[in-house]
Length: 370
Ligand SMILES: NC(=O)c1ccc[n+]([C@@H]2O[C@H](COP(=O)([O-])OP(=O)(O)OC[C@H]3O[C@@H](n4cnc5c(N)ncnc54)[C@H](O)[C@@H]3O)[C@@H](O)[C@H]2O)c1
Image (cartoon, rainbow, N blue to C red; front, side):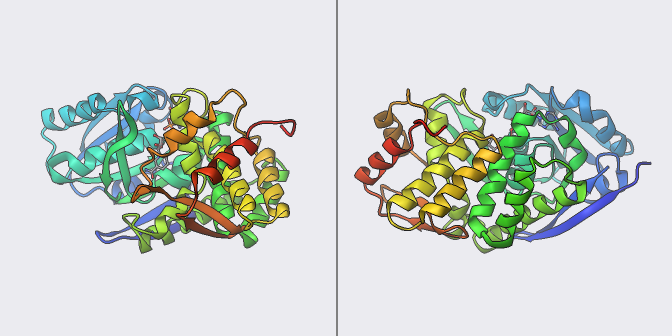
C-alpha cells in the first residue's frame, strides 16, 4: 500500500457535528483513511467522466468489502442540474441505500455541490465525504457545507447547507489538473490573502513571484491549509451566512454578474473572481478607503498569477449593472459589497449607490494597462 502522507489536519466545528480536513498525498489509495468516516456498509461514489478514468479505480479499491455503487456524470457546470441529481437518487433507491449510507464526492466543486445536495436531501439527509480534486474545491467549495444545483434561470438557485463528515484532499490529484483550472483556484487563494493580509499575503507574494516553481508538496499543503483555516473560522462563527460569512464573497458580486452576462462561457469561475477582486479593490479606492499602493498590489498579485483583472471593452455596463441587482446577496433590495479598508481588513458595505457602481464599472474596463 502507498505511504500515507498527512501534511496538515484541521477541524471544522459546526452546529451539527465536527469534521476533519486532511491535506496531503497518497490519500486516494489509503483504504483506512477513506473508510474512517464511512458509517455503515454502503457507499455511493459520485464522479464525472473526466475523473473516473483517472482516479475511480484506486478509490474503488478501498471499498471492496462494502456495497459500493458508482454514478459517473457528464463533466461540466451545465450538468449540475436536476436531471443528474435524479440520476444520483435513482441509483441510491434502486440499490437500496439506507439512511446510514455515505456519499463520496470525487471531483471539483461541481461534483461536490451536486453530491452534497443529494446527500442533504436523500431520505432527509445522509452523510457525505468530499474528495476535492481541484485547487478551487480544496480551498473553497469542499468546506463549509454549501450545496446546490443550478436552475435554468440561475446558478446555485436550489440548494441548502449540509456539512460533509470529512474532507480528504489528495494533492497528487492536482498533477492532472489543467493549468488554467489551477490558476482559477489561485484567485480564491489570493482572495483569502486580501481578507487576512499580513504574513499570509507576504508569503503569497513570494510564491507567486516565483510562479510557484520549486514549491514543495508540504508548502502547497500549508498554503491550502491556511485558506481552509480562514474559511473554517468564518464558517464556524456564521454557518448560514447571516453576517460574517458574507466576507468570503469578496469580489463575487462582480464575478457572478460577469459570469451570468457571458452565460458562463467566457471565464472559469476563478477568472471572473479575479476581475471581481480588482473591481472590489478599485471601488474601495474610489470611495477613499484603500490606498493606491494597495490597489496596485491587488492588480500586481492577480497579474503574477496570470489572471484577468479588467472588464472587457465589449461588455455592456448597463446590462451588467442590471444583472448585479439580481444577485442572491441582495438584502432589503440593497446590494451588499465586500470592500477593503486595507488589505487584511474587509467589511460589508450596504451604501453603494448606482452612481458609485456606474463610475467603478467605467474605470474597471480594460484600457491600455492590460
Ligand atoms: N459549495 C461552495 O461553497 C462553493 C464554493 C465555490 C464554488 N462552488 C462551485 O464549484 C464549482 C466550480 O468548481 P471547480 O472550479 O472545481 O470546477 P469543476 O468541478 O467543474 O472542475 C473543473 C474542471 O476540472 C476537471 N478536473 C477536476 N479535477 C481534476 C483533476 N484532478 N485532474 C484533471 N481534471 C480535473 C473537471 O472535470 C472539470 O472539467 C461551481 O459549480 C461553483 O458554483 C461551490
